[in-house]
Image 1: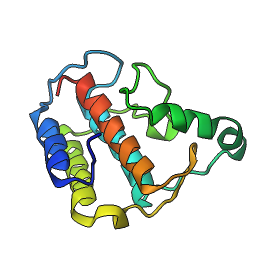
Image 2: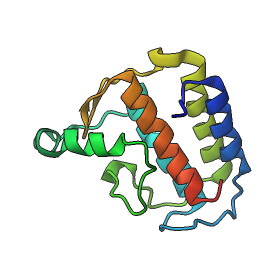
Image 3: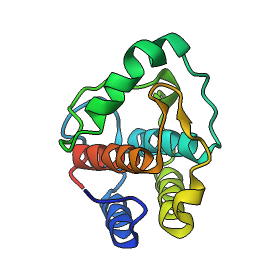
Image 4: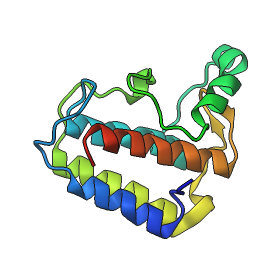
Length: 150
């Protein structure tokens, strides 16, 4: 599986982000390309420890581990998956700003490696190791880039 920490895989993700334009249309879902670019920053910020979300301990206990196991399977994410309310973007962000900020956040994985992960506990999936953070971050970005044909 590709790795967001691997410089060549990371570069490929950034090249795909840079293929997007302000008028790129989604192939499914309701987000605009600018909303998607901002949305994709949020899980990265959770991993980097710059966005703190309060975990729902009951959800983590009853569903977190099984949901994590399912999401970490080799197949891509399905269309129409639920998202955390904190990751939903209801306004129309500036495209260039959102794109540049996402690229900067993605670059940190290749530049800093595992030490960029400051939060070892995901608010829904519970405790996560580096391989799990890696897979989750890569698959999330890949999913949304495919959503917009990149």
